[in-house]
Image (cartoon, rainbow, N blue to C red; front, side, top):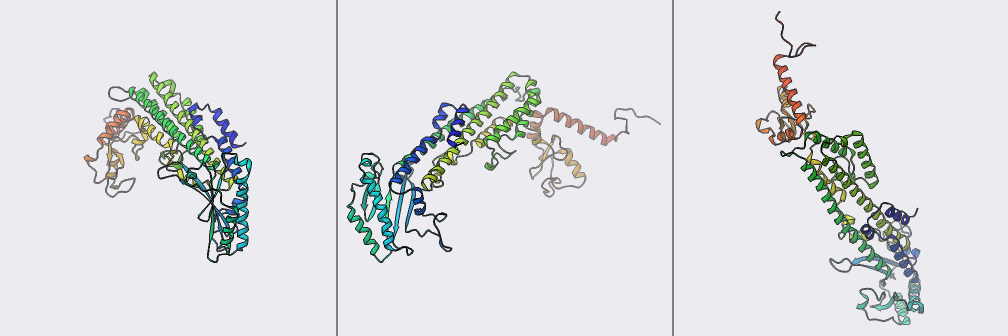
Length: 493
């Protein structure tokens, strides 16, 4: 199926808001602009295949190069350039320059002259066509400093020249005189079309609309996510801790969400290459929702606001997914319309146009919307309920209570470090930092983290204390024989 139909179906089926549709790349209209560019070039005798041979492109497969050559040997070379109207301006000025190189040793001057004359006559025949002269889009031919120049009267620079069409015999004589000179010489023809300028203006304006839409929707998403965070915080007691029943359910929900890796690979939200495409995100969200349903967590919430907050959280995720899908289809439309322009004209703007306007449009080179929103989600919502994995001692694999943070910044529970020290293992178990355990003392106790553990992991902390006390008791009285416990009475023999 052609992309134009795919684009239209996508925009129709996904229930896109009206303001989004107005900002979308107008692919069909831009294609019509390209058709008009092709017509103008054809009027000038510059069909696609002709331009392929004329365009100066060392990578071109059409122009044959010798083994030691780095540039084409064409006697007539075309160069299509895009520039901005002024510093800081956004208007794009396209220009097609055709150079007749009489210094080219591979062709005789007469042959080059004939080629140039043929091109000149085609331009003149176009300008002298009575039907075309009634068209407001007519080009003007003018001779400036021995240069043949074709200028659109609608172009912003056309008003700078009041010259009229030069005498045909005189221009022809100028070309012949140049062919007889001995020194290296070139003659240049500058052509400014109308349709290509309209094409770039329209495309630039649509990119501006997409920029603005991205800003507006990003602000909306941030508000939605922050609202979810506020609701979760409002569920807390005066001490700032969620009721234990709901807190553990929220932790389980967020664990499922993080494990689903909806937008990025786990813990790689700052790496663009790890970002999921819209199809993967949609599949991952479905996977997340499926696992939540299987867990039965939503039916176990004690507070109705918890369910409301979860629904808002899911809604924000689907809102972001919808924006990313819209961005994706418009990015495809943008790239495909540039490719279509090159395919039909051979003017080669697929890379030059994005590079020229890259600093003007966040849609092209701006930061990833998924990255910025996931960062807000991480800081505003997910961190409200810390995950146990972030506070686990890597030696005993349970909560690191009481936490000792070594000078190398790695953290372990005090009981595990005491055991290592008793075994004369003084280096950090993770990074092998010399004497990190030996040099640790009471000042290395992380009181702030310990308070957080008591606050958010009350069940795990209570279990860790119980295990530690049991272990200490066993060390003092010794482990009981099989089948007996420390509570059994001693027998006097």
